[in-house]
Image 1 (cartoon, rainbow, N blue to C red):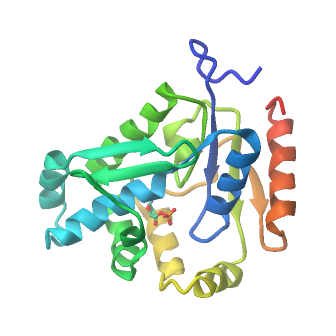
Image 2: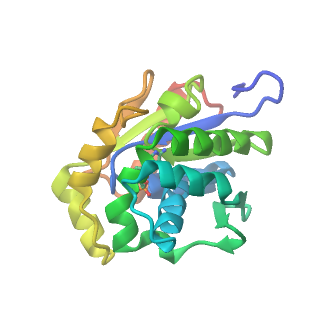
Length: 221
Ligand code: DC
């Protein structure tokens, strides 16, 4: 049985890892294969960053960011396949991948009040269905009790090349250093997670390796 929540029988698969490690691609492929919703938790931190920049606030000015956070209306949903996010009624997509958001999201993600609010919204997803969630602290903080945890990584030069390939400007080494060094919920290999290095994997072979890991962890496939 895939029990995570004993009351509902729902479960969460936690996919963590650094930037451009291939975790979103893997989570998306797994979700398709397993018929689960894929929740992109990074998009939530990006959305708060986008709003902060829209309001011309300095991301380092955490008291002002927290005041804004308390006022904003964050709506997390799903299109049946992937999570969606809207702030104050505006559905956000492409704007979340801008260079400015990339450059400031780690500062916003280090604010404890931001994390507390978004972790609550992330856990709420489990009220609706089983899911796959990808991020930095899913197996360590959001769903620490799930038995299904994969930590996805890849060599830094390969990760940087992946960003260049999609035409995105993103200082991933700087972002990873900030995400790993922050005091609250830093990027770590969660207890019980199996590490999957995607450096030499194709999408298909990475998916197959991930399915093997989940089977070992007890997922009934
Ligand atoms: O997965 P991503 O690159 O879109 O995430 C953007 C940033 O959000 C990442 O640099 C750190 C932060 N983040 C986080 O702190 N915790 C998560 N669970 C997901 C993302």
